[in-house]
Image (cartoon, rainbow over all chains, first blue to last red; front, side, top):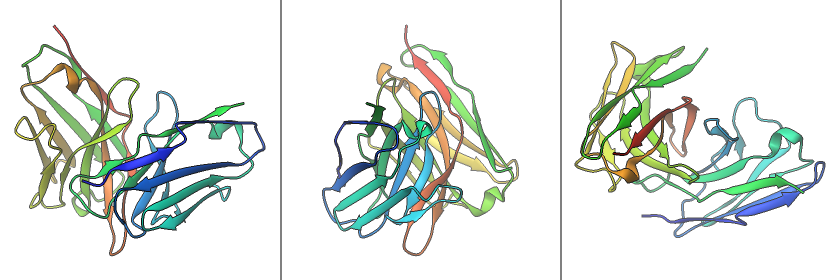
Length: 108
Length: 121
């Protein structure tokens, strides 16, 4: 099973600043990694797939990078609606499909 | 509008059973694999089960193997999850999610709002 490690667990950011979230996998997943955003009481929403491709309707301030075992989600110029929990997921070697533990982006 | 709507959650005693449903609309359901993902209160996301388009391939997380059963009806555009021998640790919001499998990448691109399962005496 591929273990996903996200850091930090919580990130405090002021509106307008940028945020950098990290996801590490226990073995290479190539570029087969997705990022999801989840707000309280809502379902997860796909942000990024293939490590760097934005899903339909996702603003350009969200960008993903990385390959192998190290991945990054960058949110530039954070808006109020961006404060949420972000999960990474690998879809390269499964079952099981595995998610990271999440990073909560909160208002500083 | 592409939509997934879960139902069937509720309060059940330990050892009990429940059947969850997920109604799909706005897309050709039979063309997509599907997943169930759950989220315990205050916790992260946990993949539960996968079913291929034609039901020819089915997978389960070790935590539910032998107790849960996934199925689908492509005529009724519906996905199901039969939950048996329920335990307190199965308490969670259960989401169904459409799974896109491309040549190089896969991802869950459409999610329902979830249905809540509470296992308690």
